[in-house]
Image 1 (tube, each protein chain N blue to C red):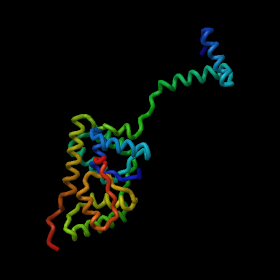
Image 2: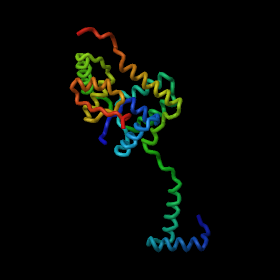
Image 3: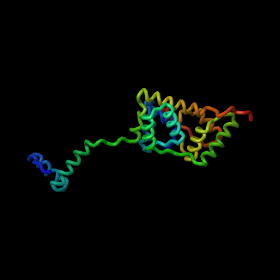
Image 4: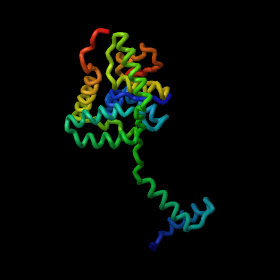
Length: 84
Length: 140
């Protein structure tokens, strides 16, 4: 890939290269990489992925039902408890 | 904030994201530990309920998220301890079912607090003499 760099930007690149003690080519690459990384989406954490996963009214109601079923099962004695 | 075991009710309230106190506790916990810990009992209960409601897309999303966390499967020793808990509670007049007893046995083995809103049933387990520490993220 080749491209024409306007003289004002070329001066900025040279200044950046001098400041960082790197070659002009390295400076161009580093600046491009930095620019590209800004637009990269940051992966969501496990916390962010889970928060509100069931946040819609329909999904919230569904999860409430799931928990109700679970707790109903937990409290249901398997058979009548005989006197000890 | 020490590592804890989350019960199904608190985990579901975080997944709903509506209870601000639960969410705030969960955020603080996640900052320190990255992922949440729960037992296979909780995974079973969520899968069972969603299967029963034929909610296949929600089941897929739930499993994808659950799999990124720490799931503790009860060991043989946990089942033995759960049996002791259940028998002792029954002698004390409380009828408990296996899920509560297993979750408590896992939390005690790991020496981690159990985070639950279902404090009443687990208090019956505490009365059996088990060193079960309870936390309720619904409280500030």
